[in-house]
Image (cartoon, rainbow, N blue to C red; front, side):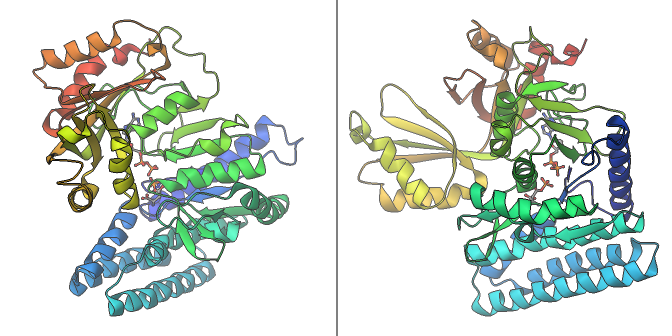
Length: 476
Ligand SMILES: Nc1ncnc2c1ncn2[C@@H]1O[C@H](COP(=O)(O)OP(=O)(O)O)[C@@H](O)[C@H]1O
Ligand SMILES: N[C@@H](CC(=O)OP(=O)(O)O)C(=O)O
């Protein structure tokens, strides 16, 4: 069971999560009538309080910008928030003092690290991951003690303690699954057999040298599926603050509906295109084993949520199941006559961006070959343009155009495969709302059709497509 950052934002929510875990354990025991000793074994994975990882990233930026007072004020508010939770969470006084001293020790370690980083005025990928890890490391002991306080035996572990070993690609590390499987089983299985609930920090692992690494934004989902695969779990539950995967972001479309079932492939497309910030690689570890994932709302236990599975049977006649939007992205257009007919052009452009660790979200090249359009995160824009200017401008490419405030809109659904007329419906619906399409891409899997609009039209485009494919009536 993985709990996202919204679910653990304050004392009340953490207590609620602890009670939810107890309920789920009881439910499992009843379902299996207690015959199976593994019937109520649960591993808990938890994310940093929503916003804390973002704040720690701001701290890194401020260190590099030499803004010490900004660092102090952000860190001060993180410390106060966690100290206050630690002192108000448990009813048992001895737990309160144990928890407070754990939190104090972590805060001291974080400040020691910050002192070093500030002294050097330097943030390396390795020190950045080490600092970001404190978001999760500060919350896991809280949930662990909340469980102890309601009578559940629990132990908190970092991803590193739990046995997640990764490569050294800081900021976006990948698990080395064979080693991880051995270590996770060795650590977690005995705890489960002894009736102890492991409470593991999401998002973090460690490389082979023992340095802390992070698995990329949204990486707690990934932690949950890595562990599930290692211990052959029956299922993975991702507990969040919405009822499940929905036909659109409920913050944009008021009558968005919960999808009862989607396939692994559809969920992966939805994740890649921004619906519920599911980690794009989170499904990889459980695909082969076919372990189902359930997305559920921790604040609405009545709702059964969404099941992500191999072969869903719901909605057999639906062409499109969801409309998604990726905001905060920018479009880079590179052009030049020497790009025409010259093999390796795209390779050279993508290499330069790859060397600067810039992820390209969407690519399009017209048959005239004289321009290539790419969408990158807004936060990567400066770095990307800089890298292209320094390495290729005046040689391979003659000009770079930037549109810095765009959004990618995508329609997703396995029913699109081989169905004629989907693109016509999509672009007519958008044009009828007076929205101009800047760039288009469709993968050959035909599971999605994606296009770019100016960001101010993003919500209008999502609503238009939700209406066009009658997604508000999907469950009728
Ligand atoms: N299609 C969608 N279905 C469900 N949620 C969506 C969708 N698109 C965007 N969201 C947003 O994703 C949020 C949940 O993702 P996230 O904040 O990463 O959760 P967590 O912190 O629990 O992992 C919701 O609050 C919702 O606004
Ligand atoms: N805290 C990390 C990892 C994570 O998965 O968070 P969440 O479950 O709240 O999306 C992040 O913000 O990226």
